[in-house]
Length: 125
Image 1 (cartoon, rainbow, N blue to C red):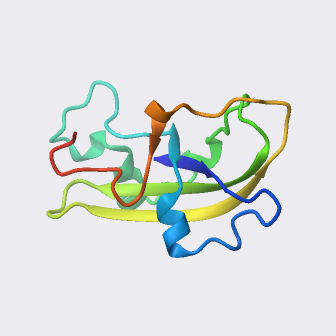
Image 2 (cartoon, rainbow, N blue to C red):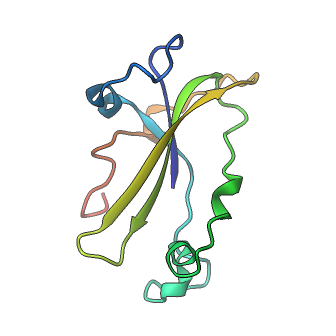
């Protein structure tokens, strides 16, 4: 999965954020891959993560597209792999800073925003 969050200070970007500040960011999803179409949950090769762990295919995410309509500014991008096979589930997040340019003016509405930690629940709700 890939999420983005706008940095609160457009001058310094995300460099001055503390751990508490990052937990307050509102993230929106821009991409996800999970179970391949036509595959069943129990089929290991049906999951996109299978390519990463078993086949060492790492170029699938080269094509994540930043929404063209997104308002310019400084953002964090969070790429995350979730290993659903293990109990408890394991999360492998990684973040980077982005400076988005363009003529977009859109920002996601509250219904598309989530915070981390807290973006997931065991019950899936």
